[in-house]
Length: 155
Image 1: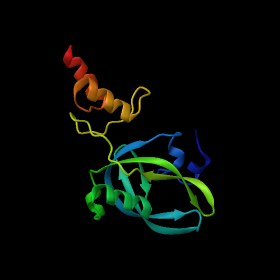
Image 2: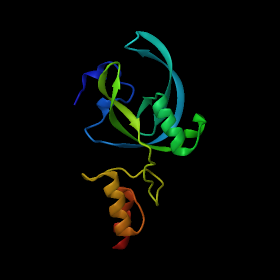
Image 3: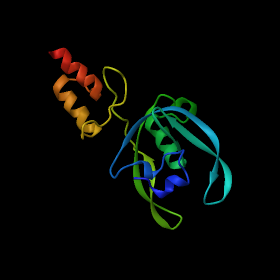
Image 4: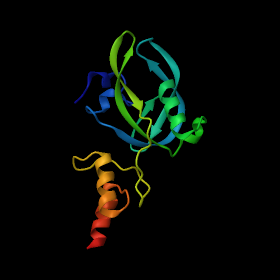
């Protein structure tokens, strides 16, 4: 779906980049401060931006910055590189109305025991279901790609 809000902010993650109930497990590759035009104030502002491997960056607010800091017990944002986060959309009250906001879940995403990558949903299964299924089948949590390799190795 091409949400109308993408017209105003296509370069950064927003609620419009998620399907209903979707969670995005992502690895932080960088944290920067960038000049961004604020549609509401019609001004250019310097804002913190978290960059991810394989996904658009996210302009973060204090709520999300605090969530990442708490999740990893790491107040120094340069040390967030390489950390995994789980993003989702949550309804919040902002500017007098209820709206969807991208939020960092207060849990660490699952990491594949073989390749070290993030375990994502696959074949209609959530990341939790992939993790649980591989734990049961292979005695370790695996991403879908490593689970395929493990199945082939079995024979």
